[in-house]
Image (cartoon, rainbow, N blue to C red; front, side):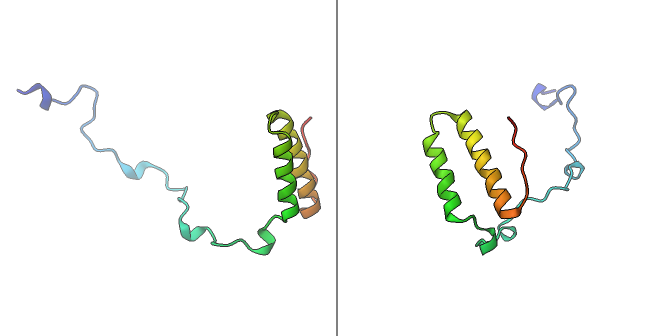
Length: 89
């Protein structure tokens, strides 16, 4: 008997059942993502410029950058949606 044709001990000769995996998560397709954002989805340019300014000023200190961006984001959410965001200290 040829040793290469013998199954490896512990290996199953049964094929893997592909249906046993969960199908709850559907991959995103190009049809799911809109080609353009609606006006109410866009962030105003003044907020984008402000975030870019924070990134440029704090590019050497990621801790301060994260803190300032989180504060700026909380301010944006407060003004845009009227919701208060609690910031960690």
